[in-house]
Image (cartoon, rainbow, N blue to C red; front, side, top):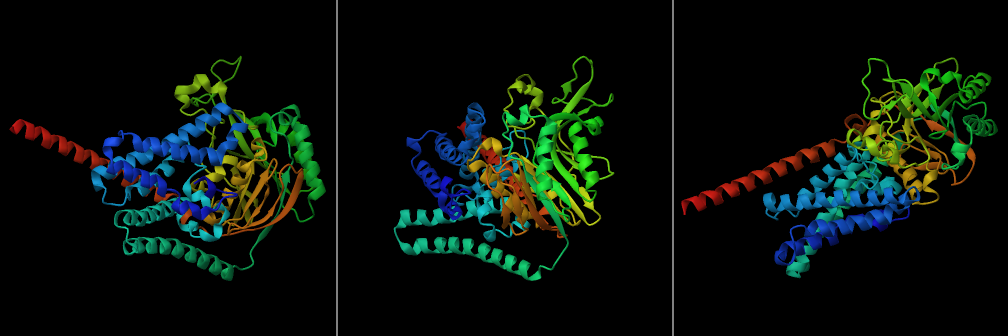
Length: 530
């Protein structure tokens, strides 16, 4: 699993990477006297812990304790899902289904894992093709969960062929499942190439927008906090002046470009904002999309939630902190979008109602930290009468359904503003950039990324990288972005495969419980009869 992972892995290996674990499961089933009931969970945990360590070891750059918790919990969740599928399959399918229940349990888990307080979807199986988007152009119909379902299904077919060889030692018993596995890989890939070829043929000249992506290369742990907001904005405006031209329509800067928290009600009074306003007055056709830290005072009739912060010296007054995208346009009020998907333990303490006392131990990753507020609805910013931009803040870009919710039939593109500097020059920032290629395919929208340092760039609607910066470069790049009207099936319907998988998994669990209760009843009746 690890050696298949982006950005230096070979993705097709994942089609057989589950097979060893499936072999272990079969050995456990056939030799129950030698194993305890939890054996499959133990061996699955070892498997997934190895996978997590191999692919996301770089988390420890921010905090060793946080990294160990992430490795342990994510591996445990994955292992428990396999264990549950194992139990249900034994009870309902009587081990005659080639473990098909695993498909629904695991895809259902990936869906739920994207939609709860401890969400960490970095290692969803469908993400593995982010460096091979030509293979998965059909993600515009299924999203990345379609890739997860594809991968697990192929592994089960290959395993079934291997199991036949182990049992019968005859090639004719193995040939059929391996042929099916080969076709099950080949047909979706050919369909993907067909989609891409048709898309290129039908591609007509459309509206474009000239974007300037600013990469200020600010060290996130110290420099970002020792520099004033005015100094940070000065660097951004200097890079803008040096790289813009008369055609520039919008300047996009990274997450937390302005790190000092600003009150939204009086944001126009801050010197950093005034500097941007002055620049825009000099260049009135240019808009700015910037990352900032903001806060908002709760209204007197607004009930504070667990992540609300008491205002010192003002009893009964509360406010929310936000990781914010702000949109500044000439002669228009500033608009705000607050990050909706927060990093667990960094931007919001999971289960805040219960864990409020330990919130002060939140991990500092060089941005806004603590328990933050969120926007409840997606928001886009209108650059002009013909173009809007969907602001995606950092971690949100790994959530296909969320990104798709920003998309409608208005000509638009996606802007990811992020601070990847805390990962240093590790696979972390490269994987994060790579995942954005899948969001482009799923929504058929061009994606631009403005990172504090590497990798900023432009990805077209087919997931191809057209431009990108280097790590640790203080720079800005121009990108001509093509605007699109298409509203993909996935953008409209979201992770329906995940919802279906959860439904089927729950149904199988209920059947298993029913069969168990019936079995107990029959045993009781038999004992009574005797």
